[in-house]
Image 1 (cartoon, rainbow, N blue to C red):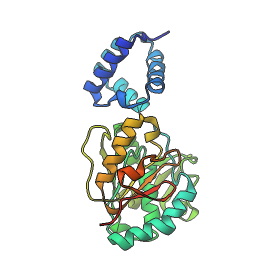
Image 2: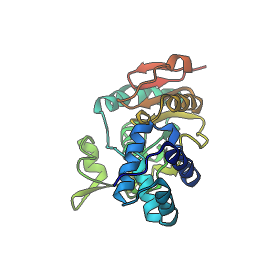
Image 3: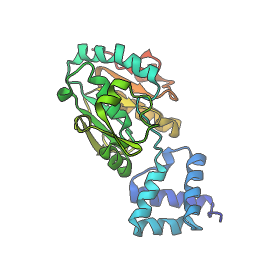
Image 4: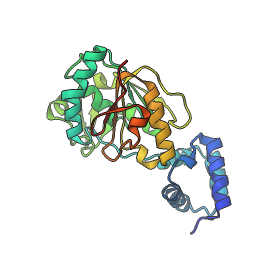
Length: 265
């Protein structure tokens, strides 16, 4: 069953979706995102964008399914371990030197919580747990709910250092439950990177493997906003699939691959 694919139909669909969700589909690469959406609509045995809009307006489960499908939730603990090693040995000690142990950290587009929880564990080698606080955000309420449950499969936690696996995870059937002492250090909130105001005074900002799905214009806007969010000497940590091509023009200093710093005053 093919979805009606007229340009006018999809343009109206994007407008309807923005009214419903405040998700701006114009900021995503159109061919890739439209293909994902068409697949989901076809799966629901619906022929037109308008019919699908009517469905998600009246069916909360279908609405949640749409938002969950639209957002890209590929996440795992300690993704790209070499980068976490650099963070552990170089970045965290520098942050403590510049800002003390009460570092203000924002984990943006945090998905199912793997990244902010990884940050808590990494920081716990340097800072007492009760002094660690991470603000974690995502556009998708469903993944935030999953994050707050804190139950993960074996593949998700494969790269977690053994010391932390033993200390902070409990096996529950085939899955692993992260401990409350780690969960309690993270505050989760819904946030739209393309629409909502950004936190300010951030010392360490982590947003990895998310912006590859955005247009170049949207990426540039977000990286500029991140720069404004950071304090002088604050550091941005991005994903191994990403780079900030115009980082110098934006004001960043490149510390190392995937780590960028706002200059000190």
